[in-house]
Image 1 (cartoon, rainbow, N blue to C red):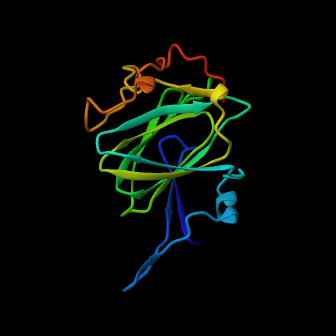
Image 2: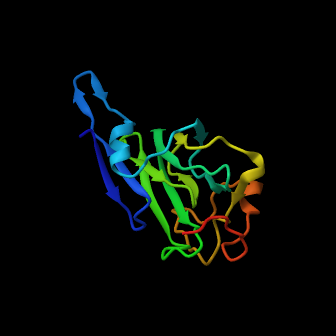
Image 3: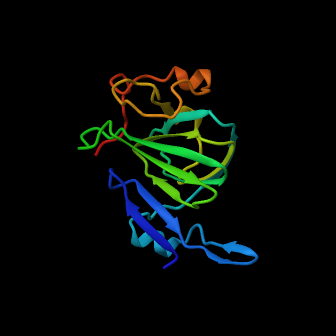
Length: 183
């Protein structure tokens, strides 16, 4: 099997490690195969691919999209290294308010599956190009967010003062969001 699927501290968020076939020319790796993902409960159709560049020290997020335009995301770093973050915002979940962080890099080739019902963001540990597949198309009216610096969450970043957009600094704390997601 070309993929290793590992549960994280929150079982629905999966760390996915594709195998690489390497030789003197470089490597080849499958990064998505429907049948393998389906066997691990990821049975979504992907509707949109996104790519972004972030300079070292930039934090993007924490974002989500409300129903009916929810998005699950399959995230990976094409260049550089990030700390990827997924926060459970599903009302009634035993892990509500808990989060997962995973280091994704072009060197390690790892990906993170962030299902609908989670706020997502990342911190650029290096200048990085990020690619993610989304299970839904972006819809401005369904856009939501969670304040990354919420003291209740206590997300640990290597830099306490990341470069953050004004918009991302104005999202509500977890006790103020009206989460549309239920466990």
